[in-house]
Image 1 (cartoon, rainbow, N blue to C red):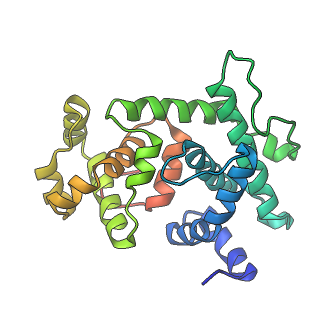
Image 2 (cartoon, helix red, strand yellow):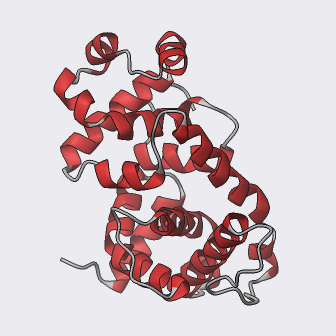
Length: 235
């Protein structure tokens, strides 16, 4: 059942403060909105399983949750729309660097001085670095999005496994050196089955790479907010 405007307002503040459950509810409610805005900027139909632009748009939406000034009473949806557009423009500029191609939605976006303080180039650079890091494990945004667990319980179990993996230097070294999950030990430590790890390999690796490193601070912060703090490593 869709959330009411009042419910959204009540969830946005705790979501920005680090309440992972509140954030999940906001994201689920706004998934159609994110899809619509991304398609509007890209000027074509997009699919969650196949289009990298939606991953960029979803990261942008999470930024909007964190950065929106709720006390000013400004529209969250308008703000989120502008952030999604800006991030996608950054993405296309980076993707088409050195070409003469026109970019979808490539126009001036007016933001407030507070919003303008963000380092857009740094965030866009992080997305590029993360993309290259995933390639080392034969992964990309499309594959990770396609293989993301749909059931909440499975997603929570795999998030726990990713946090355990990220918090254990020995297991992370195994992953980095071999490109493979240390399944036996990870199953024991995280309390998940080998079959679940096989099915959730892409999701666990993609998430653990964010949680374990310090080279992607904005994306790492988003990952911690998504999974919550605690078990399996220190923030």
